[in-house]
Length: 278
Image (cartoon, rainbow, N blue to C red; front, side):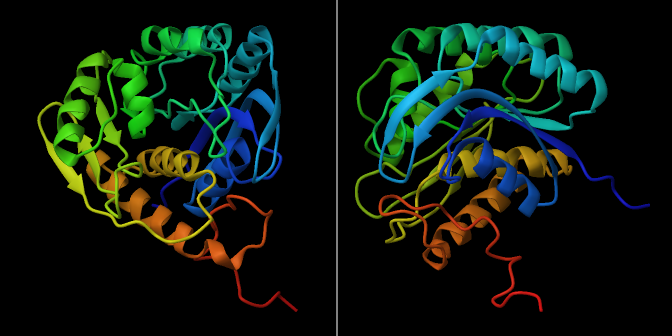
């Protein structure tokens, strides 16, 4: 019997350049074999170089999108990305708390690749208190982990191991709880990630790729993880496959020509034909 195509939801912001946020998530979900659904939680005016403005979506309407979707569509896994403001975080938490989806991947988006703040400072506590209890998987980078733990810079793999343990202790979901701590901000060429569930600590080695095409890497990874979990992969397998997919997408980003700043990764690197269909 053929396995059904899973419905994967992204709750995030819109990046008009398509490199990050909902549009990047939809590409990653589709590329990996999921059916993509999306709830828009924020609007941005941005390109590959800068974010010039952010327009919030009302918490009521974000909640209405979620409830209306869940009333009709069975969601097999979801990822949460940029929410922007505390009231939106609380609305998402309230809706998902009632729906109890099986896999919730939380990407605690705080800063864009260009350095713009995407999460209000006063919303960090709401993220800790309202979203962490719902998450079955979280995917912070090192600066985000530092903010969540209110600690200094994380500069070594030894630091990362302890931080992964501390982040796992902050999660209170009754089911599975995994931390995928991303090492892309480590000094030098090492980009090792760590995957931790409270017992097992899995090291996922990596090396920095010299490229400008790194816009939306965090969005892409978390969307890939949600898709693979929805397809039935175990957490360790999903993490390894998602990282391999992202590394290849970064490596092939040079095939795209989008903007003058941090360009997007190539989500469809393994699918697109080199020449158009005649």
